[in-house]
Image (tube, rainbow, N blue to C red; front, side, top):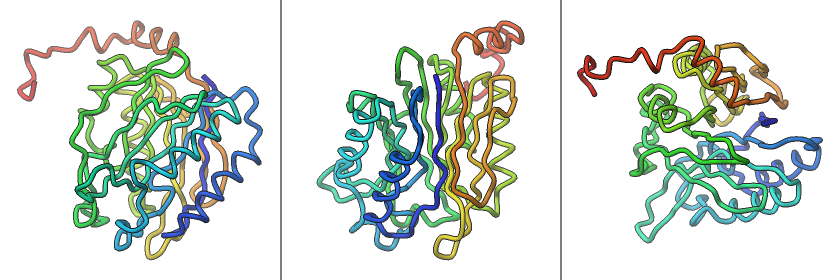
Length: 265
């Protein structure tokens, strides 16, 4: 599967400008032969949390329709990052990631369960109440998590045990913890023997600087492509479920597990 990760600066609280930006990137990129395009976390609003209830999508709209149109027009699957989203009559705002296939159909959605104390998310957002699941695109099995979820290895192991050979991490990860981002992404790839496809924003946004460093990491921990920390760019990579199978046979960690010896299981 040929993948392109779009790294760009998310404009703080400016939904129209961010939507226009995403549309322009799809027009500018040569997507011929691309199977999946990946966007970052909270790309419609950024972390304008004080106004998030007014800026949020309603049942993923209008973002879902816009992404569906782009997917069908360009014949690509889109891991559409995440958006602030009100999904029921409660008025609660979730940080919801979603996936659209190349026919413009909603394949999967997941609301971030781990909210970030350092960015004050729990004050403004509601944590997701549904477990992560895998989903399929063009016959391959994938997982999807959001930003702070990266710090919880149980999620990644759960997804790989459910058959994921690649896991997407969509984020607005701060520059102050850039080293954590780089290290944890590599660790998740190595310990689960899967591809990690990571999308992040960059630059000064309101009073926070974000780390960039979008990347694709292979199932043996090899860096396939990576972005710098301060520019608009595209990261590319190719995933292959057969390569995951080969690595898992070569270093059979899943066969070597001793579930009966682990207290938390």
